[in-house]
Image (cartoon, rainbow, N blue to C red; front, side):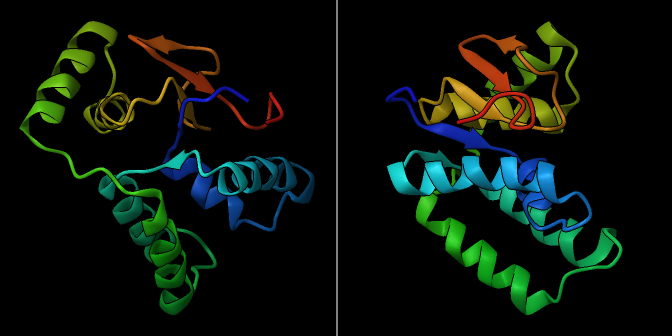
Length: 143
């Protein structure tokens, strides 16, 4: 694994809690365990807020609020990035240049702001490169 931190998006956090596909879930969990062990995991406030909303209200069955809150508190150790105006400007640029939905562009911009060269995602195309950030699908590549 490279020395650079790895940004984790909402899709990966949600999948790590989904017991419907155990073999795939184990691959996602292997990535998360590696990121915890090496202290290279990064997230943003946006990712954690989306994770909370989706896990408690938009998935079936929904997770208990207390469980999701405990997970969000745990990921606070990854120093969540709070989008500032420079991050928003970067996201607008990514949105325009790569035709990304704004929420995805904000994830990439947050990854860039934290010096991440890799973005763990199940939502963006594997191996896509947005400026200096490469998308890694944890179901395709092991940590």
